[in-house]
Length: 252
Image (cartoon, rainbow, N blue to C red; front, side, top):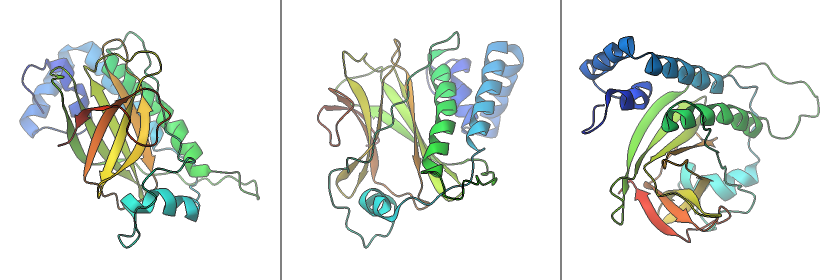
């Protein structure tokens, strides 16, 4: 969990994600006892992550949407991932970064987690059911499946990020954190892509705060999540379905 050059306060997110061995986690827990700021932020972040798990009854995604968008990455391997360009109905999710007295990265995570709770509810419910009777089932908590380090390219030495796959109730969420990114200008946005069999799939866009920190939470209603890599590009705007700008971060 401990990385070179990081202060104890910067270990809050890895600790929340369940990273580190027992000794490293105990060291951070001792830090929590003497750092009220970290203790408060950890409590707030746990509350927002818990909120994501409280969703109404899920409705199946339309079959055509599954086939067009998901199966190429997450489903039946016998289905070709065509078309190579993401369909226009697959709208990128842009998560704004909340600015407050909290440290930028942790503030962004808390705001995005709360926003994700709303986005996931809307995505799961879909159109209103004809019966008009909302279901009362409560989703279970999220489980961290795997975490990926996003490494900078083209000499962006201070930039970096992390992508975490979280699993819950037959679906997945991909949480992407960015740190130390160059500021965007005008309509520019950072865009996240999943790479599968040479095809790039749009996972949404985000902007960063004045310190280059930002976060994106992307829900996937498929259980068998499989991809070859994750990349981040700097795009001229948030409307693209294929990369147009330069790659700034990636898993490989």
